[in-house]
Length: 195
Image (tube, rainbow, N blue to C red; front, side, top):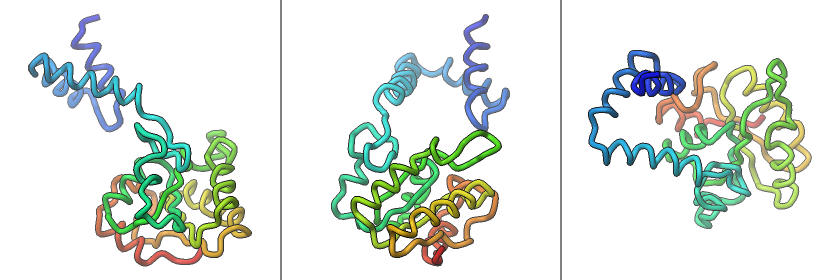
């Protein structure tokens, strides 16, 4: 197969990239200098080789514990539970949260065969049992699966955590935190409620 077509096919596998965009990207890479193209290839290779889940919060990082968990200036008694590292990055970009995180690595989705055992739920329970935080903020996406996951977590965390909150409804239902603007996410955190 032609190398350009192979590159287009591989780029089409990326989320949000259709054939036209993949073709434009392929030709951009082709016309870029060899150094630029190899730098892109090296960056992809390094991400695959060096990025691992943090042993504390399961955020993706090249160091363990991750920089957020290692930062003692952050409020260690305030845990924000997110679905994935994309959600964590969205909260960090908003700049309104100074606690620590717990990344679930997904949501409960029975139709897809994903239950609590496939997520980092057991690790969250163990974490709050070892050192109970003063508050856990449930920041799953406002989807059916995200809401079900938050309801499940609230139930199992209640005996161990004095305060469990859910981010407020400033985040549109059915959307992902990755696509929510900074102001909406900021207001959602400011107006969170008891769960």
